[in-house]
Length: 609
Image 1: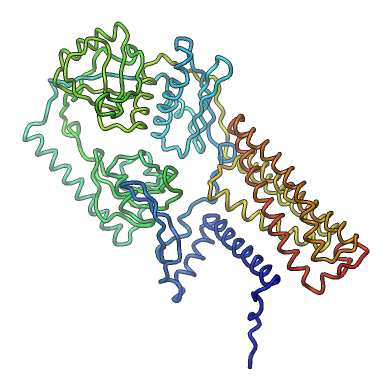
Image 2: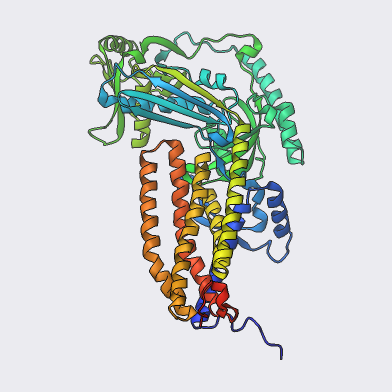
């Protein structure tokens, strides 16, 4: 009879528990290593995906967990996908790189808050930051960093645009003080004649037919990127094959986002044309990252612009007419709750000049709509129910608290006199970032090699165990950086390298206590347990003090210091797990082997028993 060699491996008892623990560690290692591989190299990911997708025994099983977010109520449900429903290569670049590694623009603006009450300055700058962020989003910049900073009475707005190469365009787009306007309905707004409308409809039917033909080609297997370069009328993405990276909700028009976020899976092309105010869209969903507020989607699209009256030589009067009332006359906007319903609403208060203008405006437009524009975009279109003479008004609607606060911020940003002036601009080249990454990787690699050589030569068998634990530690840390996710900067990489040294420090404490126990004549199993117990208090205290330091740096530091503190803190936490759990279980397992009784392997004279 053939004996099963694995029968007694996980049998009950002390050895079985140790083996189960080591087995769990290696399962964790494989999962973390798999997370590291995803997106790190599309060729690797595609080969892995192709291999497991073609395996008949597994391709039909639902084994891939994925959190699905219900767009109606934002509830999250864990769903399991089959191998054929996933695409590992769609998970994108492995790590989020900061400005110093990816290259881009760093802009610093000085805000003039001399005419604003000290209690209102923070809200004013928050509104300015919101407007700048919306303007930058129009540039297609992925994950811009906009911060406000106060030093004494000086307020600054710091803008970091990773990946931006045209710094002048960014400066022009950000502009200066936001523009708030109040507009009334234009009684002279003109419309097309039936003949002109028929002509325009014919042109737009031709646009739709052309768009449908291109969509049919794509559905038949045509190259989406090539057809986008040839046909798309979206100048911002045409040369890039229609590609947009890291799209979040609120970036595109609702019709586009409804299809992209709710109706498509990764790698799919929507089988119908999507019509918006700009024209007809052909939409493809490339990849999805994150969830909830951090959900991002890579997408391609081809835009066929619909024709307007200008295309047939007709100039139409606009729907809204500009008035003399602007943000200059608005004193403040604040959020309040309606006394009867408790629904959030936004209260407006004008200065003396604004009170007169608003009174005249509401008299002339009672029963009509009055539009409020910020940076040329309508942010609210309330109906005037009665003339308002007090200089105070209320914008009511189905607001949530968050929406009402956002609207008040935007109104205050356009209303309060907060001019900003550019005081510093720095362009960081991608070459500098690449050199920094390469130098950091080389430093980390040689540091790891030298540490490994020292640990093995000085501590011998325990040193080999510590090197294995250190490799597992690095794999887990890198996986956490992708899962959190952490934006890696040069300072952040320094935090990672420093945490490697701290991980080894814990092993040094443990091994020294282990050698002391062996010299005292204890057997190896007992020496391992006592060594860890004696070293634990020192490891705990030193790491907790380091974590407190990281918390202080993260709380009070700038963005660069925060990156260093975050990566160092994550490294410290994982290093404690690595030293106390992984190294301990490996030593417990080795203590049961006969070869481990050789005293030379521990650098002590007394033979372990």
